[in-house]
Length: 227
Image (cartoon, rainbow, N blue to C red; front, side, top):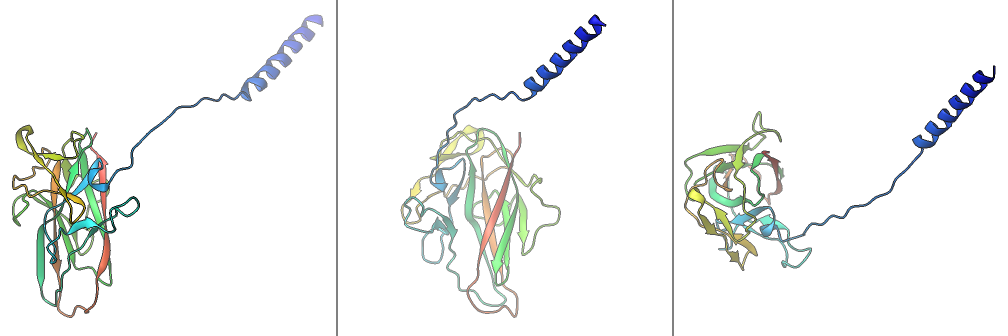
């Protein structure tokens, strides 16, 4: 009987200890850091190339370029009409500065009052030829999602002043003081999977019966790490 009581006491103590251990908490900490920069100096950055009708880059800052006024905007300045088509082979470029490859997966265009925009990723800055990947055709491209491998941007080098072309060579992406963004007029083609940049070609295809007025919208670009 005495042994049973001892065993019962030990069992009770084990239960109490397990309850005590289950309610233990610990506190620790770690630090972190990151930098906020101009959008032309980000790890995935955008550069201008084609000019709008006012002679300034289509890609430009919508604001006075001070902190909080550095939002990028595509300003075409077009006056189109029915049954017209206008194409910009390098409306803007995308440069990857991450130290690992990144896929441009897909895009979404939101336009008001109607969508007449077609978008491609392609390699040739000044020609409507060569390797091209359709990203938008007035509607989403069938099969393209955020899991797609539309265009592979090679690993960058964290140097915001240039972009990589074939053979490990690089070309400068200098600052444009009028548009407040970086720019490039490089005619060396971007190669899917090899170059760390790609050109975005945009075309406006205006149908018969299109309603006159101002057209505005937003382009959402999606990226995914390739590693």
